[in-house]
Image (tube, rainbow, N blue to C red; front, side, top):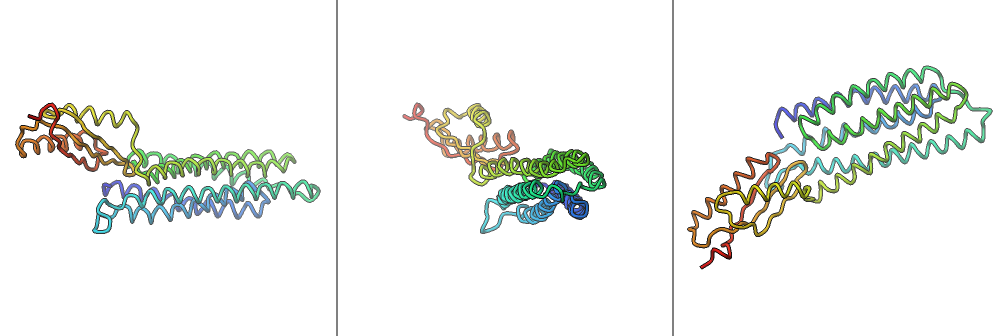
Length: 298
């Protein structure tokens, strides 16, 4: 990762962390004081975002370390591990919020005469939170496009869903002002649904990152075609491309004339190596093995 990218990611995470701390305090404080279950649920969501930002800072510090004896291929997969943990945290948060919403709904229908309408200022807190979240989404989207960081992209999706979650909270609180208090609890359960959907998506993507899943077939085909176009390559006997977080490793076996000297065969392998790495910036390393081409054997 480029040093400038690391600084941009670090800056975005720090701003997001500060914003989430403010949002969590605002939502939880005024949610409890103003009897707004949806705002409390949204506050719990923001609290999980604080933990996520702290985890991302730690993952960034580890994943950007240079390769060493124990990790000769680098530490990028620690970011994939952090990505997986994001999904786990989101799943737990969604479950907690949903169960809290159901319990509050049951208590409401059992004691409707004691139900308290959320205070009107909770609506304004939700509205302010919505605009803050929109600002974070813009910042993270720009940073994600520049740096191609998996965790930044994942957290961007999180913040986008937070916008919908906060909007649901705002709508629920507005409706509750007209006496339909149970819409406050419905909004909190909708928020849980948004978070759970994101959790499933992140868990699926993180597993592909951690298991060296192959890229799309059309992407592998592009690499194949470019290798075959290198002068001296008579066949491609085997080609494997695997993802390494947002980057890739390429392993290829090429067939060349058996009558070539070792140096001549090596030169063709070098051409393939440099051609692939120059043409595909996402390829960290292209390993080339040379075989005598069957038709070229004497």
